[in-house]
Length: 347
Image 1: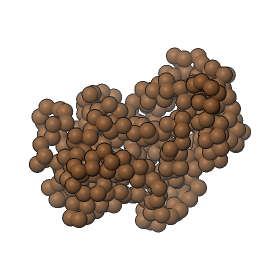
Image 2 (image 1 turned 60 degrees about the horizontal axis):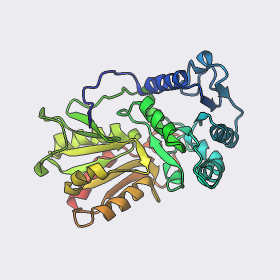
Image 3 (image 1 turned 90 degrees about the horizontal axis):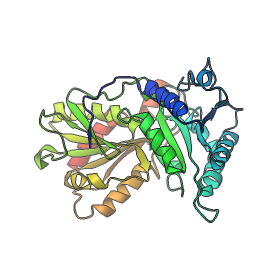
């Protein structure tokens, strides 16, 4: 367990990721970075690869606009003994590489008679709240859940990106890293002054800062609900928690995993089993979601201890509009999470 409430360093999340890539390329000559428009001076659509091609010419490769070709080439590079990090310009376009991910990269790990390492990270800038409209704003995590040999991670303000990248490459199998674009300009390790946080395994756990010792021995009377969210929803969840505390005197805990799938909440099951309400909030559109998977798992493992069905919060079953006022109606807001908790506790 790592206490991180007062963690040193307040770099922005995008800066942290950029430094992580610089460090990765510096420390490991077998790492290559591939993607569209990565080279300096542009440095990628969100500047996450800025400076890389200048420092590491020959290992930062700009590519044609063909997501299938990029992922296919990177998978071949990884099969041949290298390590590959791919940048998909927007997560929506990962769908164009779905065949390479599902039928080539995912299966290549295990279909040759013995396990074949395939260290590949596919970075996917995702999410809305930027007015980019239907084709550049999706959170498509749900489409990649359950693929054998494929792991899903999500960037968060609580997880150091170098450690996350090292972990993904060490798995020796293809991984997708979803990066909510709104997070790039947020500060690392920063929470509302009312809260503190710590890492339990790979899950960041945020709770009310009572000034007492850390740990998860939260009295039952001080726990009204638990929220589980991917990293991109964390700030909206924290805003909802603040309002629930100040306006409704409800105290909750927020759990933010780094690895979305497979998801391991084993160390947190005792706390989840004591919560009057568990709510999973995510940005993907409603229907067949990551949250559905988490809820099914918790219902199975905590049957007899859950006091209520797990509450699910997703974006609307809709394309994502460009106009800001319409986009807000579709995507999850902190008010959406707050309302779900209140309705769940009343139900």
